[in-house]
Image (tube, rainbow, N blue to C red; front, side, top):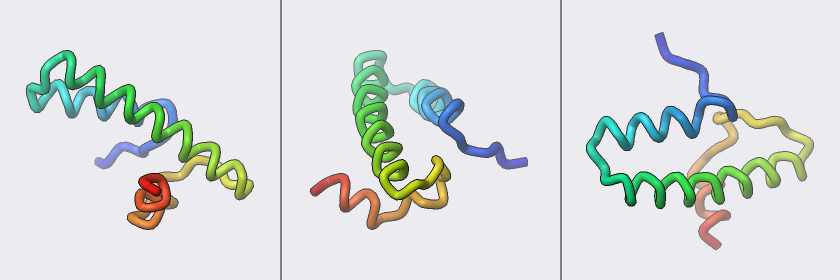
Length: 68
């Protein structure tokens, strides 16, 4: 059964993924800091469009917009 992705578990799931794949503690901390920065931006973007967090809105176009 696939777990639902939401704001309350997405970072924890990402951290487990990094730990399971044997990333160093420093790399994990850096990835999580970058992830939090992205997630903050993403949530603000969604709110500006009166949307609640939903992983389905995360597309390659969203990532390209963030990179710009």
